[in-house]
Image (cartoon, rainbow, N blue to C red; front, top):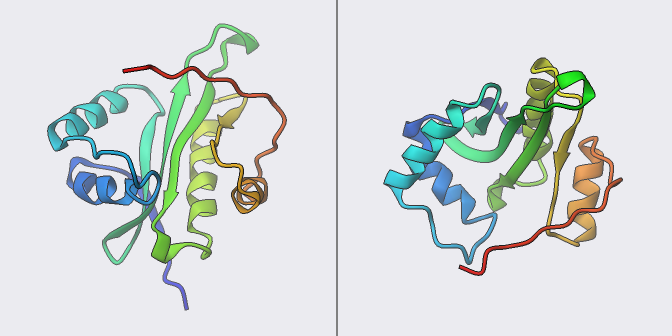
Length: 150
């Protein structure tokens, strides 16, 4: 039987576990230095409705995503949500935890009166795309990006 996932906003006490979890998202990325991570988490908390959500089982961070609520001047001034850094620890996948954390993030966005919630993935894996569709997201827009050369 799979234990129940507890979802809450990340705190500074979660940072070391959270940074370790991000290795399951992008294994080749260098980790964010702890001092910088604490500053970024504090700054994120200043944006109303925005948070890094963590899914916890037995005090272990097993899943996470970041929700940013972005103010907007269209759609009668209703904000929109952006979800990034969706990850579940590889040993805890296929148990519904990623779907649960996305559901919590979208519910929080609706509570902030967002008119839509978006996410992008760089993955072309059929299983990843199916995961997002099963979580209620629709592949309906074309995404573009430009990355810093530094």
